[in-house]
Length: 170
Image (cartoon, rainbow, N blue to C red; front, side, top):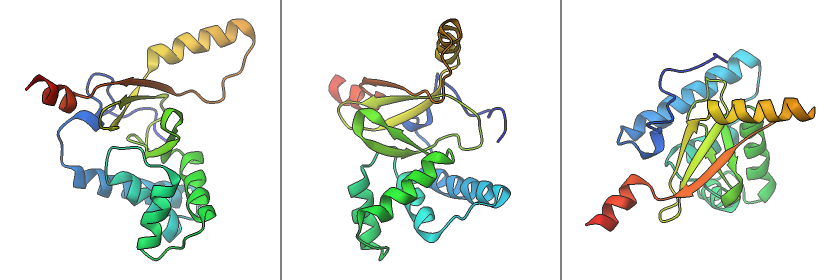
């Protein structure tokens, strides 16, 4: 993993920006294939398909929605099929679990070491991922002062995305 990426920005999270979404899918799958090859990980057809499903939209998806899509594509219908693939993707930084929604989203910055922050639209449930360096530093300081060792952090904020705000203003 690299130490950073030029497209990570708290000011302009990709999930809410207008962009070529086809590139998100292509770039995300290429990054995953490259990481798996570099680290000697098995990027099985089911894992690849689950990541592709997550990359198709900037919305968090529940495991059963993913399972339904897998079933439609002939990958099986038992919950462990989806959960094992999701566990792999999350454990290797290719996806994140959005606790607030009990759902999963593809990592927007799979080649960067970062502490994710998620902004979740309460109206359309779109999700944008951004860096949280100041939050990470504050938590690290508090943890150090108490002797606590942080293993994982995730910040989730609920609000209204720009597209939904635009709709309510018209």
